[in-house]
Length: 394
Image (tube, rainbow, N blue to C red; front, side, top):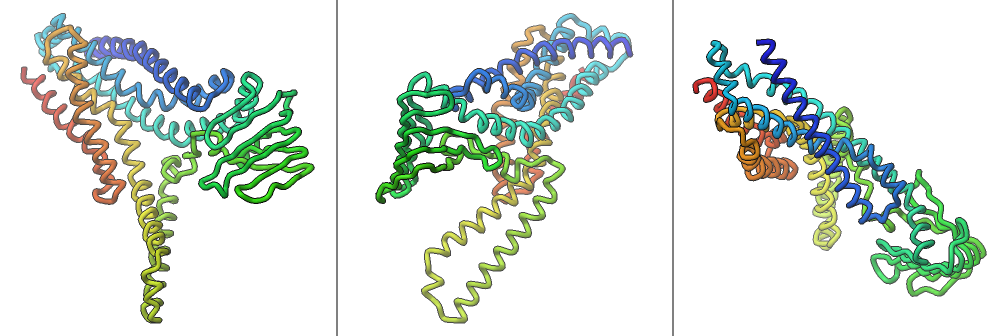
Protein backbone atom coordinates (compact mmCIF):
# COMPACT_ATOMS: atom_id res chain seq x y z
CA UNK A 1 0.00 0.00 0.00
CA UNK A 2 2.92 2.35 0.77
CA UNK A 3 4.35 1.68 -2.68
CA UNK A 4 1.02 2.54 -4.33
CA UNK A 5 0.76 5.75 -2.32
CA UNK A 6 4.28 6.87 -3.21
CA UNK A 7 3.69 6.03 -6.86
CA UNK A 8 0.47 8.06 -7.05
CA UNK A 9 1.99 10.98 -5.12
CA UNK A 10 4.94 11.12 -7.49
CA UNK A 11 2.71 11.07 -10.56
CA UNK A 12 0.37 13.74 -9.21
CA UNK A 13 3.14 16.07 -8.03
CA UNK A 14 5.13 15.65 -11.24
CA UNK A 15 2.15 16.53 -13.43
CA UNK A 16 1.03 19.27 -11.05
CA UNK A 17 4.39 21.08 -10.96
CA UNK A 18 4.79 21.03 -14.73
CA UNK A 19 1.27 22.38 -15.28
CA UNK A 20 1.62 24.88 -12.42
CA UNK A 21 4.77 26.46 -13.82
CA UNK A 22 3.22 26.87 -17.26
CA UNK A 23 -0.10 28.27 -16.08
CA UNK A 24 1.45 30.60 -13.49
CA UNK A 25 3.81 32.00 -16.11
CA UNK A 26 0.86 32.61 -18.44
CA UNK A 27 -1.21 34.39 -15.75
CA UNK A 28 1.73 36.57 -14.70
CA UNK A 29 2.38 37.56 -18.31
CA UNK A 30 -1.27 38.45 -18.88
CA UNK A 31 -1.32 40.57 -15.72
CA UNK A 32 1.93 42.36 -16.60
CA UNK A 33 0.77 43.10 -20.14
CA UNK A 34 -2.50 44.54 -18.81
CA UNK A 35 -0.71 46.72 -16.28
CA UNK A 36 1.91 47.85 -18.79
CA UNK A 37 -0.80 48.83 -21.28
CA UNK A 38 -3.03 50.52 -18.72
CA UNK A 39 -0.30 52.36 -16.78
CA UNK A 40 2.18 52.80 -19.67
CA UNK A 41 4.97 51.22 -17.65
CA UNK A 42 8.63 50.87 -18.55
CA UNK A 43 10.39 47.49 -18.78
CA UNK A 44 12.21 48.07 -15.47
CA UNK A 45 8.93 48.75 -13.69
CA UNK A 46 7.31 45.67 -15.22
CA UNK A 47 10.12 43.50 -13.86
CA UNK A 48 9.66 45.02 -10.40
CA UNK A 49 6.00 43.97 -10.43
CA UNK A 50 6.74 40.25 -10.89
CA UNK A 51 7.23 39.24 -7.22
CA UNK A 52 4.06 41.10 -6.19
CA UNK A 53 1.97 39.37 -8.86
CA UNK A 54 3.13 35.83 -8.07
CA UNK A 55 0.85 35.25 -5.03
CA UNK A 56 -2.20 36.29 -7.03
CA UNK A 57 -1.19 34.17 -10.02
CA UNK A 58 -0.53 31.13 -7.83
CA UNK A 59 -3.84 31.48 -5.99
CA UNK A 60 -5.60 31.25 -9.38
CA UNK A 61 -3.41 28.57 -10.96
CA UNK A 62 -3.10 26.07 -8.09
CA UNK A 63 -6.79 24.97 -7.98
CA UNK A 64 -6.96 24.52 -11.76
CA UNK A 65 -3.63 22.70 -12.08
CA UNK A 66 -4.24 20.26 -9.22
CA UNK A 67 -7.57 19.39 -10.85
CA UNK A 68 -5.77 18.88 -14.16
CA UNK A 69 -3.13 16.70 -12.46
CA UNK A 70 -5.62 14.33 -10.84
CA UNK A 71 -7.61 14.06 -14.07
CA UNK A 72 -4.45 13.04 -15.94
CA UNK A 73 -3.15 10.60 -13.31
CA UNK A 74 -6.40 8.88 -12.37
CA UNK A 75 -7.59 8.82 -15.97
CA UNK A 76 -4.40 7.09 -17.04
CA UNK A 77 -4.50 4.65 -14.11
CA UNK A 78 -8.07 3.66 -14.92
CA UNK A 79 -7.29 3.26 -18.61
CA UNK A 80 -4.33 0.99 -17.78
CA UNK A 81 -6.54 -1.08 -15.43
CA UNK A 82 -4.28 -0.18 -12.49
CA UNK A 83 -7.32 0.52 -10.32
CA UNK A 84 -8.67 -2.95 -11.21
CA UNK A 85 -5.32 -4.43 -10.17
CA UNK A 86 -5.56 -2.67 -6.81
CA UNK A 87 -9.06 -4.04 -6.25
CA UNK A 88 -7.97 -7.56 -7.24
CA UNK A 89 -5.34 -7.38 -4.50
CA UNK A 90 -8.13 -6.94 -1.97
CA UNK A 91 -7.46 -3.22 -1.43
CA UNK A 92 -10.33 -0.76 -1.51
CA UNK A 93 -10.07 1.64 -4.48
CA UNK A 94 -10.46 4.55 -2.08
CA UNK A 95 -6.81 4.03 -1.21
CA UNK A 96 -6.01 5.23 -4.70
CA UNK A 97 -7.91 8.49 -4.08
CA UNK A 98 -6.37 9.28 -0.69
CA UNK A 99 -3.01 10.67 -1.99
CA UNK A 100 -4.80 13.11 -4.28
CA UNK A 101 -7.12 14.27 -1.50
CA UNK A 102 -4.22 14.73 0.93
CA UNK A 103 -2.26 16.78 -1.60
CA UNK A 104 -5.36 18.87 -2.34
CA UNK A 105 -5.92 19.50 1.38
CA UNK A 106 -2.33 20.70 1.89
CA UNK A 107 -2.52 22.85 -1.23
CA UNK A 108 -5.78 24.34 0.05
CA UNK A 109 -4.01 25.55 3.19
CA UNK A 110 -1.20 26.96 1.05
CA UNK A 111 -3.70 28.70 -1.23
CA UNK A 112 -5.46 30.31 1.75
CA UNK A 113 -2.10 31.76 2.75
CA UNK A 114 -1.40 32.90 -0.82
CA UNK A 115 -4.82 34.59 -1.00
CA UNK A 116 -4.02 36.43 2.20
CA UNK A 117 -0.58 37.50 0.95
CA UNK A 118 -1.91 38.47 -2.49
CA UNK A 119 -4.50 40.83 -1.03
CA UNK A 120 -2.57 42.29 1.92
CA UNK A 121 0.95 42.40 0.43
CA UNK A 122 0.73 41.90 -3.33
CA UNK A 123 -1.79 44.64 -4.09
CA UNK A 124 0.02 47.12 -1.89
CA UNK A 125 3.32 46.25 -3.55
CA UNK A 126 1.91 46.74 -7.05
CA UNK A 127 0.49 50.11 -6.01
CA UNK A 128 3.82 51.22 -4.53
CA UNK A 129 5.79 50.19 -7.60
CA UNK A 130 3.40 52.06 -9.91
CA UNK A 131 3.53 55.11 -7.64
CA UNK A 132 7.32 55.20 -7.55
CA UNK A 133 7.54 54.69 -11.31
CA UNK A 134 5.02 57.40 -12.22
CA UNK A 135 7.64 60.12 -12.61
CA UNK A 136 9.91 57.80 -14.61
CA UNK A 137 7.04 56.86 -16.91
CA UNK A 138 6.16 60.52 -17.48
CA UNK A 139 9.78 61.41 -18.26
CA UNK A 140 10.13 58.46 -20.65
CA UNK A 141 7.06 59.47 -22.65
CA UNK A 142 8.01 63.16 -22.68
CA UNK A 143 11.49 62.32 -23.98
CA UNK A 144 10.08 60.05 -26.68
CA UNK A 145 6.95 61.97 -27.73
CA UNK A 146 7.19 65.43 -26.18
CA UNK A 147 3.85 64.98 -24.45
CA UNK A 148 2.12 62.86 -21.82
CA UNK A 149 -1.60 62.30 -21.37
CA UNK A 150 -3.29 60.00 -18.89
CA UNK A 151 -6.08 60.33 -16.38
CA UNK A 152 -6.63 64.00 -15.57
CA UNK A 153 -3.14 65.13 -16.54
CA UNK A 154 -1.82 66.44 -19.86
CA UNK A 155 1.79 67.65 -20.21
CA UNK A 156 3.47 69.12 -23.27
CA UNK A 157 7.14 70.22 -23.32
CA UNK A 158 9.64 71.65 -25.79
CA UNK A 159 12.32 69.24 -24.59
CA UNK A 160 13.57 67.36 -21.54
CA UNK A 161 16.97 68.35 -20.18
CA UNK A 162 17.94 65.72 -17.59
CA UNK A 163 15.20 66.00 -14.98
CA UNK A 164 14.14 69.48 -16.11
CA UNK A 165 11.10 70.03 -18.33
CA UNK A 166 11.73 73.01 -20.60
CA UNK A 167 8.74 75.30 -21.29
CA UNK A 168 6.13 72.82 -20.00
CA UNK A 169 2.41 73.29 -20.49
CA UNK A 170 0.46 71.31 -17.88
CA UNK A 171 -3.30 70.84 -17.71
CA UNK A 172 -5.06 69.16 -14.81
CA UNK A 173 -8.81 68.72 -15.34
CA UNK A 174 -11.04 68.60 -12.29
CA UNK A 175 -14.57 67.36 -11.61
CA UNK A 176 -15.81 70.77 -12.75
CA UNK A 177 -14.42 73.61 -14.81
CA UNK A 178 -13.79 75.65 -11.67
CA UNK A 179 -11.43 72.93 -10.41
CA UNK A 180 -9.34 72.74 -13.56
CA UNK A 181 -5.73 73.93 -13.57
CA UNK A 182 -3.50 75.26 -16.36
CA UNK A 183 0.20 75.86 -15.89
CA UNK A 184 2.84 77.39 -18.11
CA UNK A 185 6.37 77.59 -16.79
CA UNK A 186 9.93 78.15 -17.91
CA UNK A 187 11.20 75.04 -16.11
CA UNK A 188 9.57 72.22 -14.15
CA UNK A 189 10.63 69.06 -12.37
CA UNK A 190 8.54 66.11 -11.21
CA UNK A 191 9.39 64.51 -7.85
CA UNK A 192 7.81 61.44 -6.22
CA UNK A 193 6.59 61.83 -2.62
CA UNK A 194 6.07 58.22 -1.55
CA UNK A 195 4.85 59.08 1.95
CA UNK A 196 2.14 61.45 0.75
CA UNK A 197 1.45 59.20 -2.27
CA UNK A 198 1.56 62.03 -4.75
CA UNK A 199 3.73 63.67 -7.37
CA UNK A 200 5.21 67.10 -6.66
CA UNK A 201 5.62 69.37 -9.68
CA UNK A 202 8.32 71.96 -8.91
CA UNK A 203 7.83 75.05 -11.11
CA UNK A 204 10.11 77.98 -11.92
CA UNK A 205 8.68 81.21 -13.35
CA UNK A 206 5.21 79.73 -13.60
CA UNK A 207 1.96 81.20 -14.88
CA UNK A 208 -0.96 79.39 -13.20
CA UNK A 209 -4.67 79.65 -13.98
CA UNK A 210 -7.22 77.98 -11.67
CA UNK A 211 -10.63 77.49 -13.25
CA UNK A 212 -12.08 80.83 -14.37
CA UNK A 213 -10.01 82.83 -11.92
CA UNK A 214 -7.34 85.33 -12.87
CA UNK A 215 -3.88 84.05 -13.72
CA UNK A 216 -1.10 84.34 -11.15
CA UNK A 217 2.66 84.51 -11.66
CA UNK A 218 5.06 82.69 -9.33
CA UNK A 219 8.84 82.72 -9.32
CA UNK A 220 8.78 79.29 -7.69
CA UNK A 221 5.88 77.07 -6.77
CA UNK A 222 5.30 73.38 -5.95
CA UNK A 223 2.02 71.80 -7.06
CA UNK A 224 1.00 68.42 -5.56
CA UNK A 225 -0.72 65.96 -7.89
CA UNK A 226 -2.44 62.88 -6.34
CA UNK A 227 -1.50 59.55 -7.87
CA UNK A 228 -5.14 58.99 -8.81
CA UNK A 229 -4.81 61.81 -11.35
CA UNK A 230 -2.00 60.08 -13.27
CA UNK A 231 -2.87 56.44 -12.65
CA UNK A 232 -5.93 54.29 -13.20
CA UNK A 233 -5.08 52.25 -10.12
CA UNK A 234 -6.35 53.41 -6.74
CA UNK A 235 -4.72 52.41 -3.46
CA UNK A 236 -7.15 49.59 -2.67
CA UNK A 237 -4.67 48.24 -0.13
CA UNK A 238 -5.94 50.88 2.31
CA UNK A 239 -9.45 49.47 2.27
CA UNK A 240 -10.21 47.58 5.49
CA UNK A 241 -11.10 44.30 3.77
CA UNK A 242 -7.64 44.17 2.19
CA UNK A 243 -5.93 43.68 5.54
CA UNK A 244 -4.22 40.44 6.59
CA UNK A 245 -6.49 37.89 8.23
CA UNK A 246 -4.78 38.38 11.59
CA UNK A 247 -5.83 42.06 11.70
CA UNK A 248 -9.43 41.67 10.60
CA UNK A 249 -11.07 41.01 13.97
CA UNK A 250 -9.81 44.28 15.45
CA UNK A 251 -10.74 46.18 12.30
CA UNK A 252 -14.22 44.63 12.26
CA UNK A 253 -14.80 45.63 15.89
CA UNK A 254 -13.69 49.19 15.11
CA UNK A 255 -16.00 49.45 12.07
CA UNK A 256 -18.97 48.12 14.05
CA UNK A 257 -18.28 50.65 16.78
CA UNK A 258 -18.15 53.46 14.20
CA UNK A 259 -21.43 52.27 12.65
CA UNK A 260 -23.17 52.15 16.03
CA UNK A 261 -21.85 55.59 16.98
CA UNK A 262 -22.92 57.11 13.67
CA UNK A 263 -26.40 55.62 13.92
CA UNK A 264 -26.78 57.02 17.42
CA UNK A 265 -25.69 60.48 16.29
CA UNK A 266 -28.16 60.44 13.41
CA UNK A 267 -30.97 59.25 15.69
CA UNK A 268 -30.13 61.97 18.25
CA UNK A 269 -30.31 64.71 15.58
CA UNK A 270 -33.65 63.39 14.31
CA UNK A 271 -35.11 63.44 17.83
CA UNK A 272 -33.74 66.93 18.48
CA UNK A 273 -35.28 68.29 15.27
CA UNK A 274 -38.63 66.65 16.01
CA UNK A 275 -38.76 68.03 19.54
CA UNK A 276 -37.73 71.47 18.28
CA UNK A 277 -40.29 71.47 15.50
CA UNK A 278 -37.61 71.85 12.85
CA UNK A 279 -39.54 70.14 10.08
CA UNK A 280 -37.50 71.85 7.40
CA UNK A 281 -34.38 70.22 8.85
CA UNK A 282 -36.07 66.81 8.70
CA UNK A 283 -36.63 67.19 4.96
CA UNK A 284 -33.23 68.72 4.19
CA UNK A 285 -31.26 66.97 1.39
CA UNK A 286 -28.40 66.51 3.85
CA UNK A 287 -30.32 63.58 5.34
CA UNK A 288 -29.87 61.71 2.07
CA UNK A 289 -26.12 61.97 2.52
CA UNK A 290 -26.43 60.85 6.14
CA UNK A 291 -28.45 57.78 5.16
CA UNK A 292 -25.97 57.01 2.38
CA UNK A 293 -23.07 57.21 4.83
CA UNK A 294 -24.82 54.83 7.24
CA UNK A 295 -25.43 52.36 4.40
CA UNK A 296 -21.79 52.59 3.32
CA UNK A 297 -20.57 51.85 6.84
CA UNK A 298 -23.07 48.97 7.07
CA UNK A 299 -21.77 47.59 3.76
CA UNK A 300 -18.15 47.97 4.88
CA UNK A 301 -18.85 46.02 8.08
CA UNK A 302 -20.44 43.12 6.24
CA UNK A 303 -17.81 43.12 3.50
CA UNK A 304 -15.07 42.96 6.11
CA UNK A 305 -16.90 40.17 7.95
CA UNK A 306 -17.27 38.25 4.66
CA UNK A 307 -13.63 38.55 3.60
CA UNK A 308 -12.16 35.80 5.88
CA UNK A 309 -14.81 33.33 4.70
CA UNK A 310 -14.07 34.25 1.09
CA UNK A 311 -10.33 33.69 1.43
CA UNK A 312 -10.76 30.32 3.14
CA UNK A 313 -13.43 29.23 0.65
CA UNK A 314 -11.24 30.24 -2.31
CA UNK A 315 -8.30 28.38 -0.80
CA UNK A 316 -10.27 25.19 -0.22
CA UNK A 317 -11.51 25.22 -3.79
CA UNK A 318 -8.46 22.96 -4.38
CA UNK A 319 -9.98 20.24 -2.20
CA UNK A 320 -13.48 20.85 -3.61
CA UNK A 321 -12.23 20.44 -7.19
CA UNK A 322 -10.20 17.31 -6.44
CA UNK A 323 -12.89 15.58 -4.38
CA UNK A 324 -15.09 15.90 -7.46
CA UNK A 325 -12.49 15.35 -10.20
CA UNK A 326 -10.59 12.38 -8.78
CA UNK A 327 -13.49 9.91 -8.40
CA UNK A 328 -15.10 11.15 -11.61
CA UNK A 329 -11.87 10.42 -13.53
CA UNK A 330 -11.82 6.90 -12.08
CA UNK A 331 -15.46 6.31 -12.98
CA UNK A 332 -14.94 7.53 -16.57
CA UNK A 333 -12.62 4.53 -17.27
CA UNK A 334 -10.74 6.24 -20.07
CA UNK A 335 -7.39 7.90 -20.66
CA UNK A 336 -8.83 10.89 -22.51
CA UNK A 337 -7.86 13.24 -19.70
CA UNK A 338 -9.03 16.29 -21.64
CA UNK A 339 -12.54 14.87 -21.59
CA UNK A 340 -12.21 14.15 -17.87
CA UNK A 341 -10.94 17.67 -17.23
CA UNK A 342 -13.73 19.23 -19.31
CA UNK A 343 -16.39 17.19 -17.50
CA UNK A 344 -14.97 18.33 -14.16
CA UNK A 345 -14.42 21.95 -15.14
CA UNK A 346 -17.91 22.44 -16.59
CA UNK A 347 -19.72 22.24 -13.21
CA UNK A 348 -16.94 24.40 -11.72
CA UNK A 349 -17.60 27.09 -14.31
CA UNK A 350 -21.39 26.93 -14.27
CA UNK A 351 -22.09 25.86 -10.68
CA UNK A 352 -19.20 26.46 -8.29
CA UNK A 353 -18.29 30.03 -9.25
CA UNK A 354 -21.92 31.23 -9.60
CA UNK A 355 -22.64 29.83 -6.12
CA UNK A 356 -19.49 31.46 -4.79
CA UNK A 357 -20.38 34.85 -6.28
CA UNK A 358 -23.95 34.54 -5.03
CA UNK A 359 -22.79 33.75 -1.51
CA UNK A 360 -20.25 36.58 -1.51
CA UNK A 361 -22.78 39.10 -2.83
CA UNK A 362 -25.49 38.14 -0.36
CA UNK A 363 -23.06 38.07 2.57
CA UNK A 364 -21.61 41.50 1.69
CA UNK A 365 -25.13 42.90 1.48
CA UNK A 366 -25.97 41.54 4.93
CA UNK A 367 -28.69 39.25 3.59
CA UNK A 368 -26.90 36.01 4.48
CA UNK A 369 -24.24 35.13 7.05
CA UNK A 370 -20.62 34.97 5.94
CA UNK A 371 -20.65 31.15 5.95
CA UNK A 372 -22.83 31.36 2.81
CA UNK A 373 -19.61 31.93 0.86
CA UNK A 374 -18.92 28.20 1.36
CA UNK A 375 -22.07 27.21 -0.51
CA UNK A 376 -20.21 26.16 -3.67
CA UNK A 377 -17.61 24.22 -1.67
CA UNK A 378 -20.34 22.45 0.30
CA UNK A 379 -22.15 21.33 -2.86
CA UNK A 380 -18.92 19.98 -4.36
CA UNK A 381 -17.96 18.21 -1.14
CA UNK A 382 -21.34 16.44 -1.02
CA UNK A 383 -21.22 15.44 -4.69
CA UNK A 384 -17.60 14.33 -4.30
CA UNK A 385 -18.41 12.13 -1.29
CA UNK A 386 -21.22 10.53 -3.29
CA UNK A 387 -18.84 9.81 -6.19
CA UNK A 388 -16.22 8.37 -3.82
CA UNK A 389 -18.80 5.93 -2.49
CA UNK A 390 -19.65 4.95 -6.05
CA UNK A 391 -15.96 4.27 -6.71
CA UNK A 392 -15.85 2.05 -3.63
CA UNK A 393 -18.93 0.10 -4.71
CA UNK A 394 -18.02 -0.31 -8.38
